[in-house]
Amino acid sequence: MDSVLAILAGLILFISLINFVSIRTPRSSSVITEKISVIVPLRNESENIVELIETLRNQKHLSDVEFLLLDDNSEDDTLTLLHQHTSGLSNFHVLTGSALPQGWIGKTWALQQLFESTSSEIIVCVDADVRLEPDAISCAVTLLKSSQLDFVSPYPAQLAYTWSEKLIQPLLQWSWMSTVILRFAEKSSSASMVVANGQFFIVRRTALAQVGGYELVCNKVLDDVELARALVKQGSHGCVANGAAIASTRMYSSWSQIKAGYGKSLHAAFGSVFGSALAIGFLFLTGIAPLFAGITGSYLAWYAYAAVTLTRAMSSIKTGKNGLDAFLHPISSALLIYLIIYSWLMRGKVQWKGRTL
Image 1 (cartoon, rainbow, N blue to C red):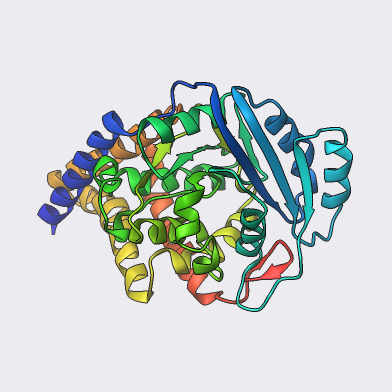
Image 2: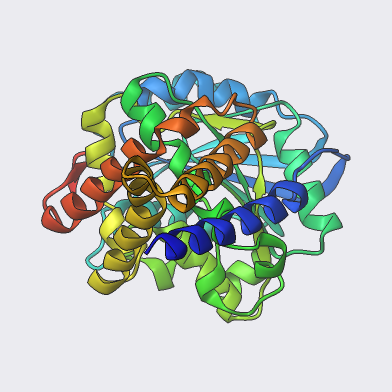
């Protein structure tokens, strides 16, 4: 068993090292002459409206850009605030979403309506809680063009302030930094290797139109990953990039929000009960077993613990953090295992943005 732990830890350390030095990072921007459509789906986002519009207004190096903001039947002041804070801004357009049709979930229906309202060749999707640096969109589009990709997903820095956030949120980037060789995945035609994040997603319209917009993922909670997989199956190529220097977001601010957020999606993240069981096994073998085996006197287990801790530290450092949370990886792994099980138990019962998922 100890040798299995050591081999597995060595493998993810090897993958992490490759990604640490080779992950694509939007570094330089150029003046984007193509027409850009920035689309933002919103439901009950009143607390984000002011900062969202400010971060979009500040975007530079975009010669021809439109911002389409769709209110998805919000139950708060989202629509009122949108009209108030976009008044006089000629390239900002506020749309009112139509009723949610059967077979769709809220976000994908909002995105489909936004997609149908655009005519630009390059579409940029941004979540309401994402904050962009002034050159973020131009940097991301420059990377898309220079790399000759069909889509790119600059992964925002995941801001974490409470202990529950610090224990869980760093696992998001670590999970793919340690398991998928990203530069290989972007050239692969295998959908199983796809990594994507819909918080900040840039895609060519021709590629998106080829899969029918968001219709193929109309009922998918993890619409970003499923959309990227659909794009790859149709012959498109893209990648996740390190977007920590150009974008940031605070997904959740409390344990209750984390439970609801992960509760609605983790059961779908691994495809099936079997896939979730494999994920739980991986988390146990890489996060919990090495520490317990090391305490009982196994030197190989201590090597495994050190190697996995190093992968967590590299993932954190790559996004501009100090990496100290890496030493808490066993606790993080245990909490994520709990959230996976919780998500399966709560399927169809979790409330999110006033809707049951």
